[in-house]
Length: 195
Length: 131
Image 1 (cartoon, one colour):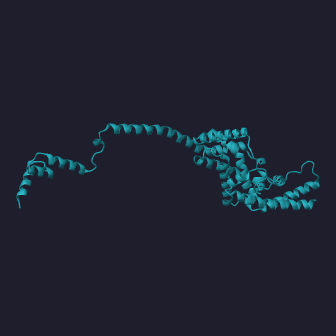
Image 2: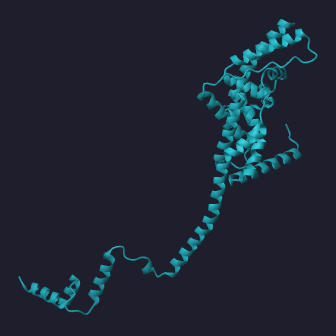
Image 3: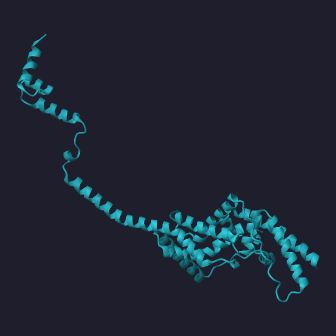
């Protein structure tokens, strides 16, 4: 895939802008750090939430990860993208938190109301599919669940997931493949039953 | 095959999105989170600023001290800078001077033994006379 020259130049400018922000943060510039936090906190929260399943825990992990990144920022190589580095810290902390704590049960996710055009029968089917998929997700090994959710829902790429979860890309592929097989089977069975 | 595996599956993605909680739709107070991140970082940022200030003062001061020391070394005579660490070097110098000096044997011995006055010189001489 060829990236247009204009886009490459924009990316370079963005990288340079971020490198300057990081230099300023190294010198203790609070405004630069705030800007860096604003740029990355949503994705960081998304990863933490996906791994922990709880808003409050995810927020705590994001705060801790930003502080840890700041403390270690002198070891960060200039010119490298900050996002994946931060997300790896977030993922490490979230995984450690899971291990360290007897994690409280994830807050139940309420079924959204049936959309306007759905008949009661369709709404019931949809609800049934959700229940089965949720059950299948809950039964997946946690690495498989993280990988498939981060990939299919949050839109992270394979290499990004590999870096943040400290896995080889091949392992990410393996987990993705395993999770998809299980979940596609659920979808296929459901489709056959409701045909 | 590998590239294919890393291609998204829209049907599965839609189904998962439907059943999974969307972190972004969670009741997250982004402003509050940003403020909390800034608050937790404030001490470390202040430490970095203060370290930077100290370095700004310490580096020129260190350079100035280095230059001053080099100037001092350049202007001071070698013997004054490097005195004998113990008495050995000084003693060797004194023996050389004694050997070159025009003194009698008795005076030579007395000087060599460190005796400083006539009585001591005489006692040395008397002692030499005994078997």
